[in-house]
Image 1 (tube, protein in one colour):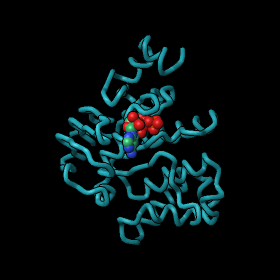
Image 2 (cartoon, rainbow, N blue to C red; image 1 turned 90 degrees about the horizontal axis):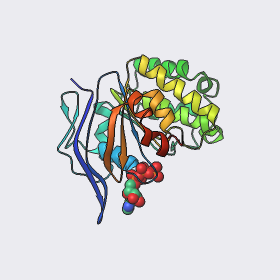
Image 3 (spheres, rainbow, N blue to C red; image 1 turned 30 degrees about the horizontal axis):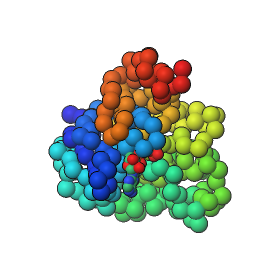
Image 4 (tube, rainbow, N blue to C red; image 1 turned 60 degrees about the horizontal axis):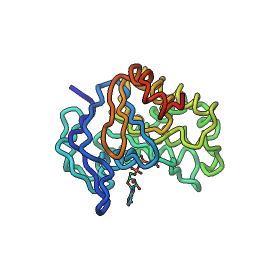
Amino acid sequence: MTALTVEGLTVHYGGVRAVNELSFEVPPGDAVGVIGANGAGKTSTLKAIMGLIPRRVASLRLGDIDLTKVPARDMVRHGIGYVPEGRHVFAGLSVEKNLLLGAYSKPWKKETRETLDQVYALFPVLGEMRERLAGALSGGQQQMLAIGRALMCKPRVLLLDEPSMGLSPKLVEDILAVLRRLRSDGLSMLLVEQNAKLTFEATSHCLVVENGSAAMTGTSDKLRHDPRVRQIYLGL
Ligand code: ATP
């Protein structure tokens, strides 16, 4: 059984078709990438999966749960974690309060404390800064916080929207290390990125999205050696 199944996903903004009949699967414990240029339809794809924007979809399943009619507010409770583009941490709240908000769908209990400790083990810097206001963190630390917050709901699948955006090459390496660690821990992930190099290194399969459609699909290894991908997305 796949972790996440998306069949025939389409998004329109008025007359603009931003996502056009996209279909893909995330196998359990695997990481799948969606790469594409600015405006290709990557963010719309994730927002549409989350139910945050109107969409048409033939089938949307998390394991054997049908998510087609599940409203956005219930997606997290069903096991989809979402790290939005631009992080959107709560700048005026402490690091720990931001993390605890990620567990809002779970009642306060011992398990939440354990999950918090797991997030601090994954991101020691967040543990050191737990009382610090999120707005005082660097961009890289805020990205770690956004990922940590999404992990607080113990997702079955994690959706990540451009986690490398605006980060220095060193911090992009740190994000890659985190994604690899999560993958080796068995978390299923869908990674949307403009940074093709990072995506190929973090995932096993990828879709290349152009004008809302899947222009190419394949293993990340195969795609990273494709002459067209190398030219357009890796600048080689
Ligand atoms: P980026 O890397 O810049 O985030 P993207 O691949 O995520 O780009 P989307 O943000 O999904 O692309 O946008 C896909 C298309 O839909 C683009 O043509 C964009 O201009 C259009 N679009 C996105 N949001 C809206 C909106 N709220 N209203 C109208 N058109 C939109």
